Length: 163
Ligand code: SF4
Ligand code: SF4
Image (cartoon, rainbow, N blue to C red; front, side, top):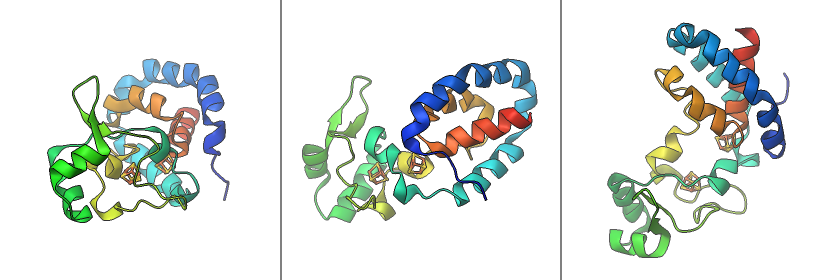
């Protein structure tokens, strides 16, 4: 079984591949609308052979958007008031969204485990989105995510090389 790319190489690799990925999208946009099953199969296959605990690049570099529901769940898990969670960990960004004050994420341990894993924000649970319905709608976002996440990079590479 082939090893997936190291996250440290992603910025260079994905910037080299970007033109080809965009070209594929321009040519296959309609076709891609009916290809969720194929994309999700790639996602499952690649996720299974990816060790997120030896990566954690998303938790180190991307700030998830935190909803009110996320806030309630986090407060419960941390056994503190929502206002205390906001004061200690969160800020409002330039788009008006709640995000973590600091990155890497304050809940990321040195062993790459998430200390609030069961209660982590929805955006964390859904990342890297390559198993999302109507994948074609987030194809361009995935090109961006490919410079952070090896799973996304591999999905795009395999999809566009076989398409
Ligand atoms: S989801 Fe992607 S970026 Fe995040 S830890 Fe797993 S492989 Fe790394
Ligand atoms: S809450 Fe957990 S899963 Fe989300 S960014 Fe922080 S460490 Fe990663």
